[in-house]
Length: 412
Ligand SMILES: Cc1cc2nc3c(=O)[nH]c(=O)nc-3n(C[C@H](O)[C@H](O)[C@H](O)COP(=O)(O)OP(=O)(O)OC[C@H]3O[C@@H](n4cnc5c(N)ncnc54)[C@H](O)[C@@H]3O)c2cc1C
Image (cartoon, rainbow, N blue to C red):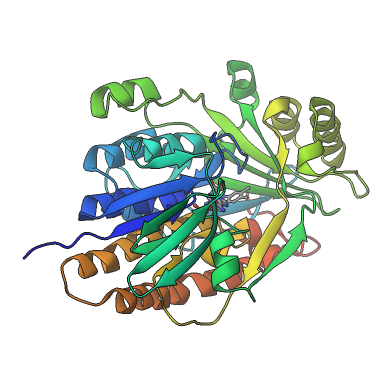
């Protein structure tokens, strides 16, 4: 049966937009991706936890070799798959199994260095990826969508996909009543990474490599730490699997997010200098005074230029709406707090579900708006319960970080 390709315009070249672009091309459609930034340098963190929801979506959308490159460069398996809560001397208090358990097999989905995944997703999209051009607005009619870009030019397509993140311009026009709920930084929104040098390695007890660690004390200070050790070095994996993909090398590191004492001034992200980061690193050390030496060594050796603050926010999403030629995926549809490490996984899943529905349109199996409505219904059913659960940050973060320490008994 003949395939009738759609031309799909994607606003936003983040994880969701790029994954959708690969999937749509693989299905036989054509795409153009408009990304308002001209570099991939903006800060959303280093390590990204990927589970089978995200991994399956990548497998369904990416060319086979790029998927294998993702697997090869993701982190080695942890011994324990859930998050582990410890007291400040590293005695275990509790643990929580992952929301979505890993699959069996030689390369279960684990986690990635975010920039490397982005580099894999950017591969082979040169002809369709337009950097430094944002989507400003759109107008749809019976035959298609006209999209106005940030430089004033207009482009036309059959479908517009808003993959433009929490402050999405596409969503603001499509669903103007949806609000972003700002939750601020609250200490735990400061991230950085610590390279695992031989000297640091010698100070790290093996238990810190067992899984994602949430370390807490009775005064409310918290340290989230997770090691990233790639399964294979990037150059070796590229040479064998996909030599055309330029991947930067990544040394093993610990991703860390740590409290600061109450009253510590945290300037907005755009005002940060190296001195700000040094001051905040020192404030973190003050917050964990007297903690296990390994925890202090991780913070003391933090790579100061890597530090950044994320002002957290999430959406109060629309319950439902009339499907049209314009839809939204990823954070633009359901930005959530990073509490459960699910935002990107759900975003990648959106991309794969939308690709499947639009493939049905290409094959003539269903009308366009019916297919987009089916995608949107599935997206809401999957994403919204997770969004709501993630917004209970203190109950669910790090496997229940706010365990009642007064009553908690160490288990090891
Ligand atoms: C600190 C932190 C840690 C996290 N950890 C995890 C984790 O471990 N696991 C997990 O699953 N999720 C995690 N998340 C969530 C995850 O990062 C997001 O859910 C995911 O990046 C969303 O992808 P996206 O492509 O929808 O949006 P984004 O990654 O925000 O991409 C949107 C893109 O659109 C571009 N854009 C914006 N406006 C326009 C416009 N008008 N026109 C064109 N382009 C535009 C932006 O520049 C950006 O490149 C974490 C988030 C944070 C902040």
